[in-house]
Image 1 (cartoon, chains in turn brown, cyan):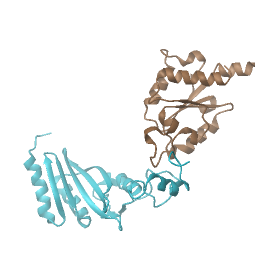
Image 2 (tube, chains in turn cyan, orange):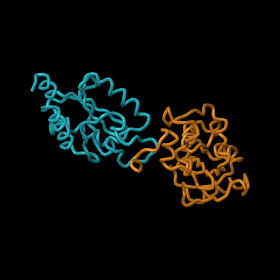
Image 3 (tube, each protein chain N blue to C red):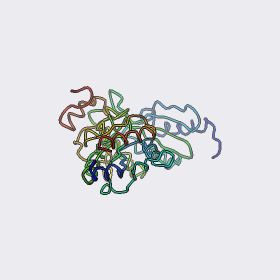
Image 4 (tube, rainbow over the protein chains, first blue to last red):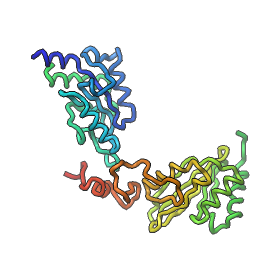
Length: 139
Length: 169
């Protein structure tokens, strides 16, 4: 493992983006950050700006009006960058499939590295997804 | 809020029918106290709303909803006065989808009429600022997603230029 990979995979800073989610996934993401589940033991830290972040955690079914903003926030993140789609909505649109204003999933807009199913997924599942993402990046 | 019997609210509706005639206000229904429905002709809508506001204190428009009934559209004005909800249903023919704007009488309708215009395409005539409210910026003119004659793939063809989704490979 190069020192660069070591440094990157041991401090994956997160940006959390709500693309039209109902807040259930957001609450579970926030729960995963608390000391009880503690995603910080892997070095993950929630950041307020996409310019500081390596991993984008997206929840929600991506409505048409959010589409361009999601793309723009993604483009503001420095390389290398990863995207985690949290919840059924972010994976495929969920129950909002076939709605006129729904783009049916984050991967229609930007490339996605990890999918976490569930409605909402448990904090343990979110932890598992983040860890699997780090493993694939060479943890 | 003082307790009002169903008779008192039936009287409000009967007053309205007496004022405007049975050909303009019809299909009235008062299922219980504090709740009433009536069909109103489009031509008399402004007079009815004004009468209700001035005579019976219906100063609050809770929301305006639009329904595609098959042979025509129906715009439903939900008015409220001291807990008494009165829904005025206005049939709108499909070949002339317009209603008079009630913004001059009840100012709270300003956003609801724009919403009905976006989603069902019933234009509020006389609205001070009838621009787009909730549809996306790149949404084409003349596509109204809540009209029943279009399914999702027809809308996607009009908006994105192609069909897509789980039914289309």
